[in-house]
Amino acid sequence: MVFKATFKSKPNDVLLASSIKTGSTWLKAICVSIMQEDLSPLEEVVENFCKGVHPYGPFFEHVLEYWEESKKMPQKILFLKYEDLKIDPKKEVAKIALFLGKPFDNEEDLEIVLNKCSMERLKNLEVNKSGSIFSHIHNSAYFRKGVVGEWKNHMTPEMEEQLDKITNLKLQGSGLEL
Image 1 (tube, rainbow, N blue to C red):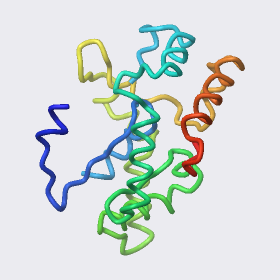
Image 2: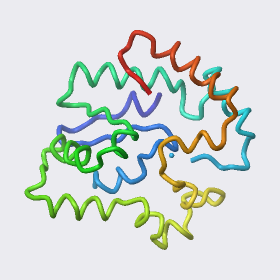
Image 3: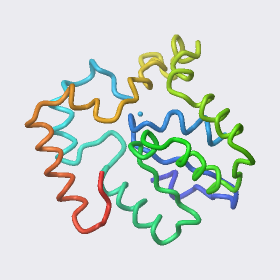
Image 4: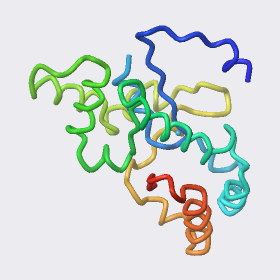
């Protein structure tokens, strides 16, 4: 609340808003997600999430707010999905660059950025292998496989059903599909 009340943006500011563990770590590298496995059992995390308990506030309300604002002001808010970035990284990174007013001059520059921001490169940087932001959260926690659908290897069909049900309910009528 304090941040919202006191934040004054400038015309050229870029704000990257994403929930934890949503694949935005590499996006931060273009524009210049934390779950400690031992904190809570996954079943408890899913149950709490479905009840609206999330470390950074009501997830669906935040996502829908950005979604709606991106439709009203597409020149100010670029709404991206990790799945789209994985399907066609060149297209999506080019879209990000254009949105930021810094379109690529050529394919080679785009390839350089894609390489510098690749999951493999970022997770193998020494700072990400051995450093930490907080004493109990290592930088390596920000990097998993980066594979769309990997969650299916960790969730039960019941948890999937529970998440699908709440997602459909919360996003109903919005035109947004996650």
